[in-house]
Image (tube, rainbow, N blue to C red):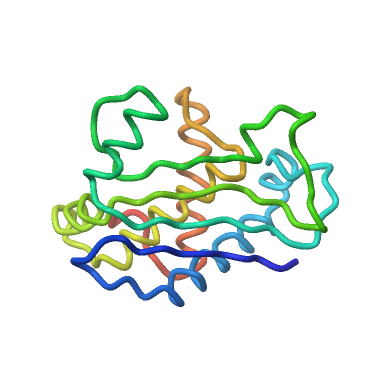
Amino acid sequence: MNINIECTNEFDSWNVDIEKVKNTASTLFEYLMSQKEICDNCCLKNYAYQSVSFDFLFCDSGQTHSINLEYRSKDYPADIITFAVFADSEEDEKFVLDGNINLGEIIIALDKMIEGALQKGISKEDELSFFIAHGIMHLLGFDHQTITDYNFVIDWQKKALESININYDKI
């Protein structure tokens, strides 16, 4: 399976290593999709495809505040917003175009992410990996509206991060 990832960095204060983001996201995605429990319950189940694609937008909390207000009617800046286009579409609106499924977009407010890393005493890169794993879980259709769903997302996010040698318990 091919994984196509596009990244746009509109945050001037940190030059994100785009290739590292793409590699981390691909590795985390591949790990999650190698797990039966994820495959059997994600939005990709029962679809034939050769590739998936998704995007990252790195911005500041002012931008996520505007996006949150406009698209979610929430008046606060978010650290991460995920538009899970494929997962959130009605069944008759989901489509595979030329063997590709577009999963959607992960928007990360890097100023809030960096602030969180400093508060936790961890590297920006580890915190970014945490957000990437979380966003991918959402793109695959996993949400956390209940405590059971939250625990499922966090447990798999932890396993995915540990698969790339990031100790989740320190995050």
